[in-house]
Image (cartoon, rainbow, N blue to C red; front, side, top):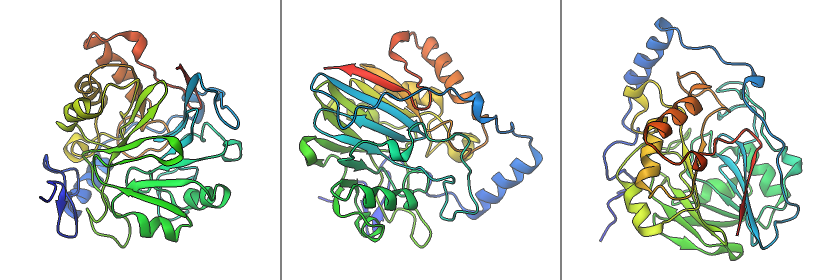
Length: 325
């Protein structure tokens, strides 16, 4: 039986649009709204909190797991068996070209040259703020033995960028590279790059098994019923990394990007266990909300939901979350 997210020549969301149906007219409407409506200016880089990362080199010991936020959807997750990077981007722009496109608001929280040996790279989908070609070339050259894990349809693209050991996963598929179990999980999103069609490649999140418990990396996603399914099939989670930014205007962004209130509800759907670490804000200005707004709104939504305040961990850029096994 063909899975519900497969279609001829590509992939779809079983729960309706994930943003792939937005048209050129929609883009013109949004552009016009941005012209006639004054959006908040970009804040200065020093308005975003930063911290000194606590990276273990070459690896953590057997009694801990470390989660360091590099920025946007890029995390360095260090377990006793592997150093894992998620959606790495160290470029100045999230764009197919170096001279145009969203420019970084803040520098990465970890310098590229300070990375420890990388064993696994997880890629959630092919959008330029998550799959950055220059960064992939740098990682592939510096860490040639790394395992590259991506959703279905990405192998040829990654091979062209220099990646060697490639693994493609469908939703709910599992792999054990470098002694670390990785499971691809559903997300509500879409895919497209220059010279590719919408939905030509799959999108996903991941669950990483660690000695301290399971870590969920949500990738890029709108809100949907899949979070309850993920809780039942892959939970509970010691850390829930979920996107909270790039959400305005809602009429355009809602299918593909959760706002902070959606993300808190997703955490509840996932079982409300472990810590909630927000991501997908503070690095690139992709949409219309004030870039400093997402953490304020997520804290308010958390309080209104009467959740344990100690479980919301809004990391500063570069901050490391230490988890004892």
